[in-house]
Image (cartoon, rainbow, N blue to C red):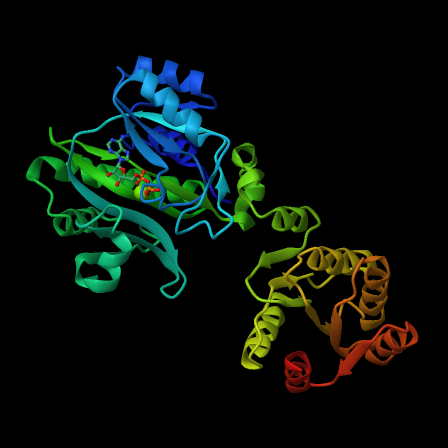
Length: 382
Ligand code: ADP
Ligand code: MG
């Protein structure tokens, strides 16, 4: 679950991370009032669940309160397309009106879970700011990754090593180490999967400030963070993904046209690989889970079919706890209810596979039944 910049900054500030003074505004009038409180000259920042706002016109300087209102009015209610939102963009419902900061240097700081290392890492670069992607690509030696042993936490020597990589002046080293410790604690306490501060700035008067903040919470740990649920903004999420998560279905929208419905995340990923190896592109990742029933299968298929880019469907079921005949009934039910019936390839194996195939053949639907993954790939390519 992603947080907005303003929510991330509020959370980090509670841990002692220094952030600029700022107020959230949902209308031009509120922005004028906020800018007035900040002395007029402010930065107005679109609140969307994506970075790249600066380059896309979502971060603008206003020289007085009236201009802050004009900028807020031109952003609120629109859709902002950035390099990270995809072509459909993200709706701007709120802006953050923030004091302008005199920037000496822009640095990069993040805490993420590194799956390969199986531990959190802190990543810093002295070349932070809006070009960080190019820095990482072209001059990776300017990026330092410090793995943290979760059993002992962030050690002071690691803080100093990071500070050195950031080429900080002597007076900023202690505040930086404190900031790194605060972010690491926030990361662990909240079961975050990412905290990114880009830029972390060194101001002209030598202070460190988190000028931007991105925070992602691990969905699988949300059950123990009831308060965090209030921070969710489903308006920023893909509508089908929201519907799926409410139905307990793991669904991720992708760019292709082959709808995939599978039970089990590993099998779902293997199925997507098969689709790709056949030269086609999956339209989604969809895992109905091990204990799905007929209704859930039907819901999953209908959800998948409501994506207009789905032109063909591949179902790959390994019957275990979920019996194949139950899955088959769910498929037939959904195709009966759907307003369109894209070509359907089904592979079924395991518990009650024969009964399942019988249900499918008896349905009268034009279903191509295949036995192996290779056959499935060939059928979907055809
Ligand atoms: P994004 O990463 O989505 O582009 P940022 O919040 O990082 O958005 O803002 C982009 C750039 O705008 C920053 O790198 C910084 O140069 C400038 N900026 C952002 N907030 C402020 C501020 N309060 N004062 C001065 N400059 C700012
Ligand atoms: Mg940024």
